[in-house]
Image 1 (cartoon, helix red, strand yellow):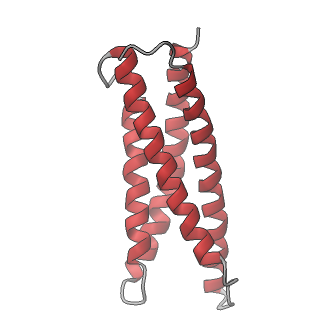
Image 2 (tube, rainbow, N blue to C red):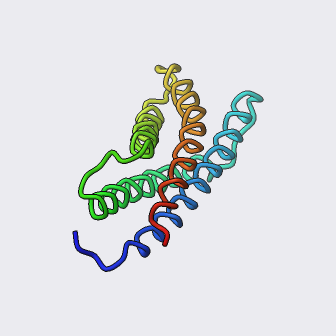
Length: 145
């Protein structure tokens, strides 16, 4: 790809990553609140579950946007992929986000394992977000003049 500058792409990526982390924190907070209400057998606010679901869908969109930016930007700059551990970290985040989403729609009274898979996946996702952020910082340093 012969684009004049990839700086605009990295700005979109930086904002998207910031929003994805913010969405993750909102999901952790609302998920923790729902878990607490469930454990205490208290009713949760009626808006909590839709808020949690919509925020999760937004995070999926942001992660897919980041995947697209990473592929386009790296192929456009280097001509190929796999120049840093950031690719592996990014693919891990994408996989974990989709595993989390899949397990979320499986949660029901008949499938109690799905709730624990969802919670466990999101705990691992926290580590993956840290990993992708650290490796992403190294990648950004390569592109800045």
